[in-house]
Length: 243
Length: 243
Image (cartoon, rainbow over all chains, first blue to last red; front, side, top):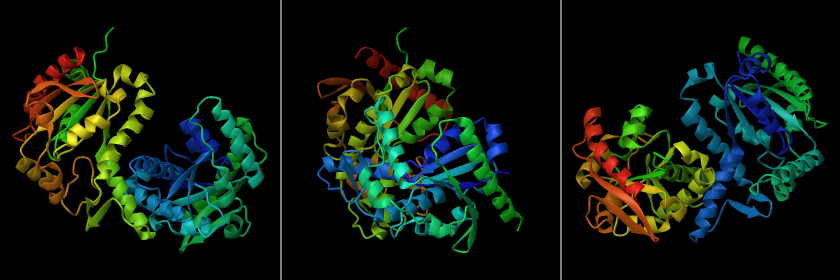
């Protein structure tokens, strides 16, 4: 058995991409046995923003003004919070086209769903509630926790590191970090618990909060961190399956 | 050793002329045969239809959020383009995508071919495209133009899809009849090629090799298709080598 839809949540630069890279580079048998992650697809809502921004950049060259995104000196920013509604609906669209019509796919696959939300009107509660039942009923959540200050530090460090290799390097712009991600509603949503079941639209969703501080580049340290979090979450998932 | 495959193969012709079917035929041809007979080894495909469809679907979501529809309208399950700037957008998107994903990684072209697929019509459709596509793309491109009658295009367009198909794919996508009438009833291909069956299209100071293939009657017979496409692809390769 393995996770079906595994939500990987947390602030930008909290460590979501590192978690997914770790899983990508992990031996597939070990990954399945130890972390309960089958061969996986990744659905990251940042890519929806990126695609929309790319399209709006091209349209702007043709004289069509942008309405959803803008470019700042350090990256792409949504003009307003409505963007979070757009990406949630886009997530529903992708799942309804690609994954949910093929339930057998989940026999051998995990889908990792990656996003960040803040405390504004469209925080985690709102976004998760906006997802279709078909997505949620197969869902489990790992929330990767890093403080705002630590996320800001990692965001900048990651950017500087990437800049050494590519002029196309990007980071979550400081404007977006400040406006959208300074605080979030995760603790409020989970009642501050480290693990348990969320009740969203009458569906129980297992969750675990993984403290991802201090930052470590040591694979052994990260492996233990991921193992502890995912084992707890998977036990809850199995418990849900039995009930 | 000189390169034995096309870099970019531009596959064009009005909607319903058989472009997707040609690519499907090539996919079903074993790679070794395809390489030897057609100078096409492994290949990637870029078709502007999914971009167009995705833009129009995104507008469904944006409309729900209060944004006005700018590029297309939806009548039941069929989209109609209302801003023909979209077609210029799609060409610029080819430029951005091909330069970022392919030209920036020359190792792709060492053994592979990129298929670039689109349909245009009206009095200056193709002329405009070949004046807008980036020279870096055009200088290593060959054009395979598929022709049939407008009536035959309409027939194929109608039979390959039903209005109830919401999950339109490359092989079943349907273009609304009035869009077919407006966009594809006439075209400027023969003006551009001086009614020659093969030769070079001149654009932006470049000579781009082309062949025009009469793709009627419709057939699904593999041998018949092989016979139909072999000669023109061989001719196109000769023109491409000596361009």
